[in-house]
Length: 163
Ligand code: RP5
Image: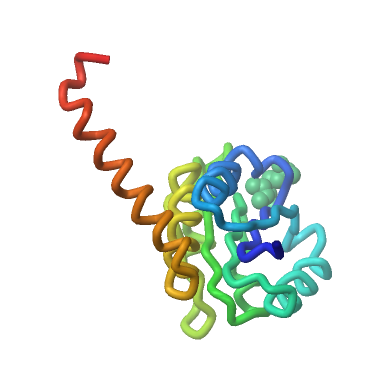
């Protein structure tokens, strides 16, 4: 099946952060592809990826980057698909640079910005699934089950001192 979600990242070094997005989509039965697409090192590829994604059947893009993280914003500038930005926890500034450069988009070009790091990647996948669930009932069912299982797992272990 063609991928519904495109997971792109500025560098191979971002994969550790973005992998939970891929794992979460797989668990929910959502098809996806993963690619390194850099706003700075491969700008032509970024333009091509973003401007052709819809025609290839992609419906949501998750874009993760660190430092001067222009990838999500530039991707959104070339497509009207929903773009979810994941700030990578950079070494120099602990991800604050990534967060601020992704979240502070000018009005008119939206990026849905998630938390710094792997929590943001997981939630980007859940949000992508929620967007797709409006059109694909099996994804809605998988999301409902994910929430039920999560709740039951917490309730099943009420005492933190007992493993
Ligand atoms: C950004 O620069 C990438 O998103 C990455 O988080 C950061 C560092 O990249 P590498 O030097 O590890 O390739 O473009």
